[in-house]
Image 1 (cartoon, rainbow, N blue to C red):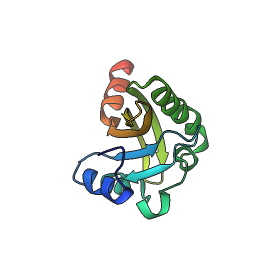
Image 2 (image 1 turned 60 degrees about the vertical axis):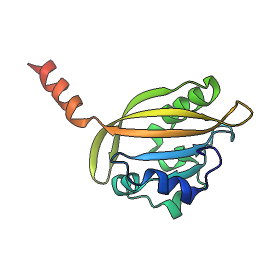
Image 3 (image 1 turned 45 degrees about the vertical axis):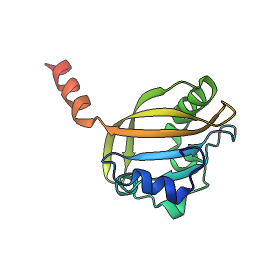
Image 4 (image 1 turned 45 degrees about the horizontal axis):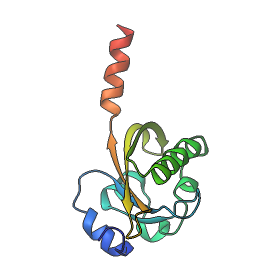
Length: 135
C-alpha cells in the first residue's frame, strides 16, 4: 500500500496523525522528491502539499540543514534500516528542535522505494536539558 499509493492517498492515510509526517521517493539519488506531507506537516511548516510534491526535500530546508537531512535520507535508503536524527530548525515561527524518524518502505523487488518520515517536536526536552546543564 505505502509503496504504490498516490500523493492524495498518502495524504489521506496520514492526515489524522498528530505529528508531522512526510513520504519521499528514494530512488532519485540525493534529491528525495516529496510525494506527500500531512496536514500537521503543512500546519507546522507553512508548506502546502500542492506546492511541494515533486520537489527535492532538502531544497526546501534552510541551507545549513540540507547536508544533515540528505545524509540521513541516503543512510536510510542505502542501508534499508530506520534512521533517527535530531535537528534544530529555525523557521518564521521560531526555532524548534525536531527528532525525525525515517522508515524505509521496500518495494516488491526488495529495494527501498520510499521513505516515511515522522517528526516529533522535542524543543521542551532540549530546553529542559540545557537548563539542567546550566545549574
